[in-house]
Length: 537
Image (cartoon, rainbow, N blue to C red):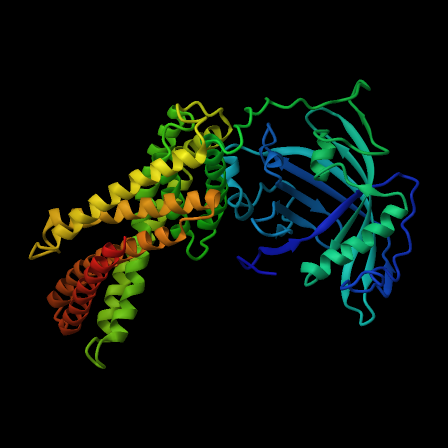
């Protein structure tokens, strides 16, 4: 379990749900796991008294969170009363992330600490109660011979009422959830063993993804379910619209749409990370935005042209705002590194403290700009545009082209473009004063951007083709060298600025000169690395 604030707690929920008839009896689970290699064995079974739970689920009028496999509820009763936010599993994981917040008063709004984790989905839209669940829950606790908790089986009799429609539904389900620390292969084998025992008692794998979906009637309800409105008529939920036809396999449209969809999902995840102040979150935001721009620029003419152009324009603005914050973040980390490489006593703590304080002020301002951006209509419009781009039919002139052939042609073009930019950057090194030679610095910056776009394009295509790693690494070496050069020159400017203020205040500026010299030397080293990397490109 991890905590992101003194009041907020998190855990990973790994569970399986089962439909069961109202007359079924929970089977004896003692000894479960004994016949499954690698599974823990249930030795002790404890039965708790039934408890009454009441949960109110919150969502938008069009059930945005439900569509994203996310649930937000306020639950009263039981041992975990409070606000619960359940998020879908992250890539490569099996368990859902569950975030808890204290219950508060009945009339309190959704806690900001939870809302910000799903704001990329809500995009400023209001939420309201969409379902009320009253559950009679009887828990069976499963322990091993040492008393270690393995899992819990919740036998739930559920009564759902929809405040918007007046529809009432009831059903019964069993829910098996692993205890904290029981996961991986051990947990899966235990769940498999429990499943055999439950299915032999008449249970079947749940036909619904969540209680919310079942209560709203947006999924099949399984056995022993009633669904009546105020007038006794059955209620059905009609999908808002049919998805666009899937592009042909191995077409350029299939490849680019899949890559764009993956980057869209990363944007939704990184939005919450930035709002939550997670380490490296701003860097993830900037990198994901740049990858999206590179994808749609290199493979232009594949997806819907108008939507793609809207996304590229919006992404450019987001990249600029997040780039400022990331650059200051990097600069601040350089101060201690450079000071530690100076001869002992050459750089006073007062000097590094002044620089760190100045950069800290800039970072607070820049991160504030990023967070304000994430609450802006421009960010929500961009997310809407990305959603539309992924869902819309691919109408570009190259949509039906074979992905392999189009990618080969586009990557050849990117390599030629990058080599031209790198040659121009190499020529710019003849300038005698790179820090003040605006044209030279601009040429090197263009070379870096070209190398970065080539790298991102190669990495995107590698997910399709499985090749291109070596070329991507060579492009990354050029990008890194020129990035180091740019960061070093920015550090020199910052040190000079702070040194000027310190000098006017009567402070000894010797240490600042040492730091500036070390950074200038770092810039020269970076240019030598760039020349070597350029030869290998």
